[in-house]
Image (cartoon, rainbow, N blue to C red; front, top):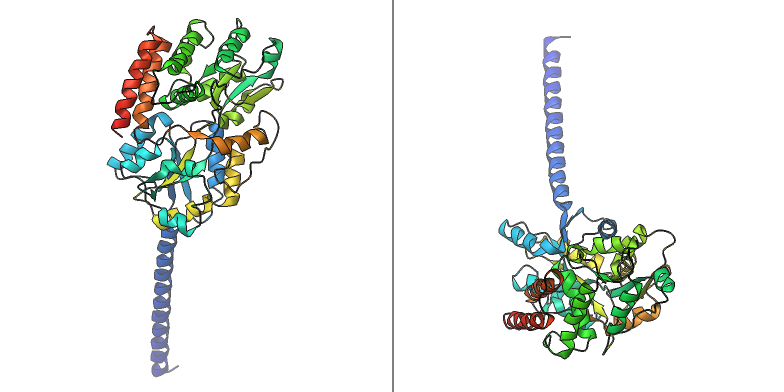
Length: 417
């Protein structure tokens, strides 16, 4: 092979090598660019949710994992520390994309500017007539909407059917019969009645039901009907019809005591049903009924809303909101989290008969339910209720003095809203 041919071959080789190197470099650069785009599109949505019980956490995580367009991370916090968590995230500029909140807390979030206006989204998705006006009220300010209802949770009476039958006690239908039933059931190893009193939201829910069940309201706490509630709480305490440790009972503690047979009747959120069935022994038969009332039926609702934060990845967050508010998914939420469907056009389906709400009760509840409050000052109201009722539970304060004190604090909180 002569020298000229050798040079030509070498030049051809170098040109080919250069061409291959350029092609590989461009391929790598394009692939790297695609990876960056893909990473951006797969950036996770962050959700903050005030769920405490393991059954509720597991159900919610299982539900959101069905969203496949991007990864979804859920952080669970206590209802008692929820607002502190929000404030810390505001200070650190690290608000989540999606916020689940108790209905009484949503107005506070709107007031401090945490929630994004989703009025146009609701109209575009034709969702404005899919939910009751009452349920939507806590997420509306000045005719603009900042959230959607996620759950519709009845506050009910659970009772030990075997214990009531053994003691020949009827299901209590009014407030006086509630006290009498608790007295008749009480034994050496069990209390007649119980409610969660460790956290302000839990204790104020029970008080709110009792207040309206007696025939009064939050504006008239210290009238004759309101005073009766404080007398009943005092009687439950002084006659040992409730545990002396009730101020340390959160919802999980309450359910655990009930499932062990330590308490025979409890007032609590219906969504505790899963936890209750998991803890109860096989022989225990659990009944569920409307809580006793004097003047009118009270269907107290413990709803949750879903909101988008003002710092959210808006397009992705709205797409998730569209997914979770769809008719089929609202049905799944109700079934898995033991709530009633938040949308009007989704039917309630009782999965089994073990301490499940009847179709009739569910229908009446969805028609007549009442929310605790739409005041942005509810946080202060519930704290005032919690502080003063604990003066009855833990000390020997007179019910009359407590009634007057709470009324003064509530009036101030309402005026400051």
